[in-house]
Length: 259
Figure 1: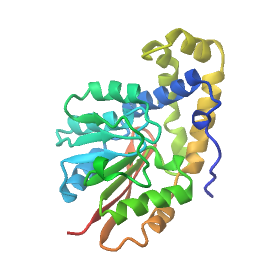
Figure 2: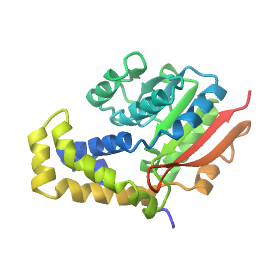
Figure 3: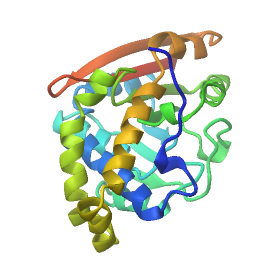
Figure 4: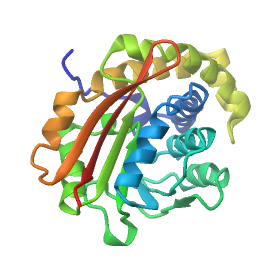
């Protein structure tokens, strides 16, 4: 299936905040409840051991929930947990701090904008992660992100919730539907308004389903990911698909510079 970089509602400046928040919060809940990262945890532990790092810069962190899910997955397996630094070009500092508060001492919020394609030295760490977010970047931008990482000899760990497959995306829909229905009761703010947009009108459901389908069409496949890293000399790159739940598969693409 050819990659299609269509729009997602949650990225549009004109998208009402309450709809955008509902979609992002639903994805965060679904990601955690489906335990998408449970099988990824051991791969990540091996990655940061090989990268010889104790702290990681997370790029395009959004709400911070993907990193929180990673820490929870590591904890369930009894694996060591590095310190994460959350960053984003348009940081939602309040949401990031809510996620960080559940993991005291393990998550730091970078409050100023961080360009994932040109990470400032003051915020950089020996390793970088981008969890469930690379598909948001068009190919030239994604390639620049990899190039900046390689130019600075940082390790890189990419995770996506499913490969470019509508079938694999559909495997996550049941838990996302439950998360979407319950999110108005769990949201940190505007619960009544989110209840209206979720239970009494189909606005969030329609926009969220569209975004899920577009996410599947936007995913990078193994060949495209390896092409981005093709010029990186002295790196070991790995591509894996890790099963979770009934029919789900998370994608992991990682690169570690050789000593």
